[in-house]
Amino acid sequence: MISSKTARILYAIVASILIILFWRNIGFVTTLFDIPDNSILGLSIKALFLTLAAWILTIVVIKPKELFSFLGLSSNILKGFGITLLCVLPLYLIFPLFGELNTKLTFSELYDRAILTGFKEELVFRAFMFGLLFRYAKTGFFWAVILPALYFGSVHLYQGHDVLSALAAFGVTFIGALYFSWMYVEWNFNIWIPVGLHILMNGAWHIFTMEGTEVAAGGLISNIARLISIALAIGITIYYHKKSGKKVFDYSIWRF
Image (cartoon, rainbow, N blue to C red; front, top):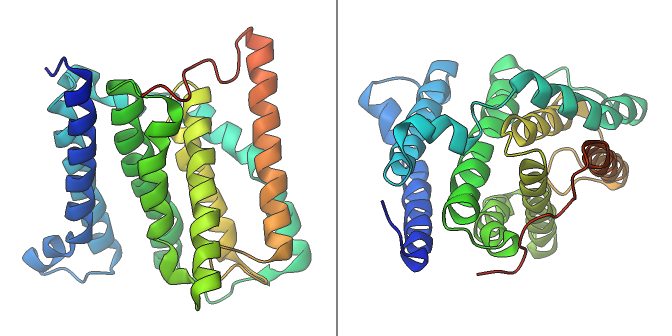
């Protein structure tokens, strides 16, 4: 195992680059097995191989028996999704009032854009990339979150139709990465909380049709609903910590 902190940080960065390169070229998996790329089976196999790649890169530095615990996968899934259901409730109350059901949405699209995307992105960006820097290399929260947040924001630039809207998409998703990472830490690294938040927030964006839901940046009403949801999540988290006798931000922020 790597003992030097500098070496741990370098490994976390190199491993993050490797997982992103693998993800960007993961289409070879469905080509290899001659499976339609965007079929449910094809999407599932690519997600499985991405998950396996994250596991392999993690057990290079983490004991195999600690793998699920380190990535937060062994955390209470029912508690995770129960908390997230409460946090995203404003979206599912507000969106039907100002929008309408997306009758063109197929299960395959919902599976890809909400369920799989929520799981894959949180596993890679939060549990793996952020986890290696924050939990393994022991950097402060800011330094651990900045790399995955920058990349997370950059992969959503395509949703803009001009420079301004692209930057808006980047900004919203960058803030989302900070929010998901904070929730992940504050709820004792229960990965099912950011996974649930991501799935259910993406789900609302696709289940309902209203101004702004066609892109990550959102419109006025959708962003108001999103801010209410985030405020509710922060409030629930602070209340839970006070009831448990714990402190919020009880960890280093700026240590490198």
